[in-house]
Length: 92
Image (cartoon, rainbow, N blue to C red; front, side, top):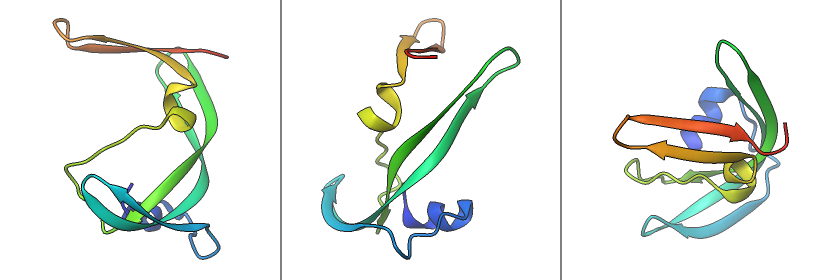
């Protein structure tokens, strides 16, 4: 995520671990914070804590979901023809 997203969401990065990393073809300064995430619909909800790196500068054309932040919590099925994405929690 861009560093501006942390500010918009009220995530304090002042004491966050910092690193200089290459993302989307650019060198960025990143701060990591543990954030609470929630996916919900009318019937169910699933919440978890994930490490999120907030980077500055950020290239808006580049997006990334990490294994520890998202894909290790869900089985993801993409139905391109039906234009749908199904998420099934791995450990509800």
